Image 1 (tube, one colour):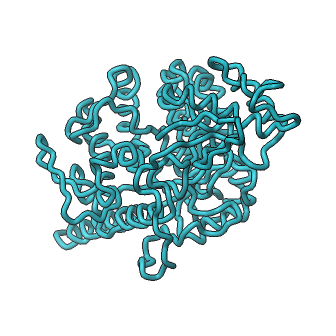
Image 2 (cartoon, helix red, strand yellow):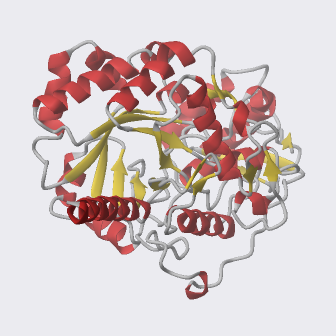
Image 3 (cartoon, rainbow, N blue to C red):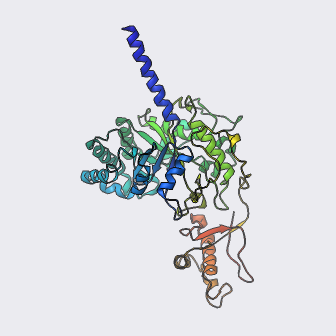
Length: 464
C-alpha cells in the first residue's frame, strides 16, 4: 500500500511538472487584422508556426482564420467583440447563438481553449458597456457549459489603466469607480471557474513617459546594478515588467482574491513610431521581446517576486505591423513581421534560439527625446476623397485654422489638395496638441521634422 501510495504521488507530481512545463514553454502571438495589406489566413498560420508560436489569439471569431487553424496544434483564443457585450449580457439565447455560430462549427478540430469577452473594455469603450462585462462573461460561460465545452476558459483583457495606483507594487489598487461594481465580481467569476486574469503589460509606455527616471536596461530585463526594493513587501525587483504584474497581483489581493492566475494577454515593444515617440525602434523591440520570451519560457518557471516560480502564460503583441490601427505611429508598428511576411527582426517564440544566432540589429537612433520643431503633413498615397474630408474637418476647428490657404492668401495653391491638407493638419495640431490632439487623422497624416514652409507661406509647428 505504501509503494502504491508513493507511486501515485510520484505520478501526481510528474503530471503537475509536465503540465507546468508545457504551459511555461508555450508563448503565443496576437494576430491582429487591422491592415489592408496582410497575408491570407492560410499563409498567416504558416508564418505563426514558423516563428515558434504555440498559441494564437484573434480579436474576434473570424471564420476564415479559424478554418485556417483547423487541424493545427496551435491553441487558440477567440474573442467576443466589445460592441456585442451589452446585448449578450442580458440575453441567454443570444449568448448561446454566439457559441453555436462561432465555436461549435470549429471545435474540437480548432483547439479553442480561451474565450475573451471583450478587449480592454474599460480603456476603450463607453462607460455604459463596462457593467456588461461580467454578466456577459457569465452568459458565455453558461452557454459553453450547455454544449459541454467546460474546458474553454472565459475571461476578458484588462490594461494597466484599471489601476489607480501601481507604485510601489504593494500599493497596487484598482480604481475606485470600478473596483467593487466590476472588478470584484469579475475576480469572483475567474476564481470560481479557475480561469485567468488576462493582463496587457507594456513596459514601453511607462518608460517612454518617464525615461529620465526609468533606466532602459531595467525595462529590458538586463539591468545588473539597478534594483528596487518595495518598502512595504520587501520584495526586490530587477525589471519593470515584474513591477507592473505584481502591482495587479497586490490589487487583486486587496479585493480578497490573492490566488487568481495571471495570463499575459499582450506584451511587446514598438519597432517604429512618430518622431516624438522615444525609443520606438527595431533594436529596442527585438531586445525587449527576445528577453521577455526568455523569461516567460524559462524552465523551471521564474514567475515574479510576488509569485516566484509560477507560470506566466502569454501572448506577444503582435504578428504584423497593422497599417490601419488608429492612434500614434507606434500603434501600427508592434509587429514581429512586415505585411509581406518577412521578419522585422529575428525572433523565436519558443525561446530556444540564442541571441548569437540572430543577424546584427540596427543601432537605435531615438532613445533620447526629439527636441525641435515638428509639422503634421498629409501622408503619401492616401485617398483624395478622405483627405478632402479631413481637410474640411481640420478647417472647421479652432480659430482661423485655415485662413492662410484661402484664395489670394499666402499659402493658397490652386488645385493642391495635399498642400492645403498639410497646412490644415499642421495648423490644427499646433492649436490642439496640448489638449490631446494627435497628428493622425485616420491615417491620412504623418509628423515630420522637415519644414514644409515655402516662400512667404509659413506652416505652424509644434515644438517638442
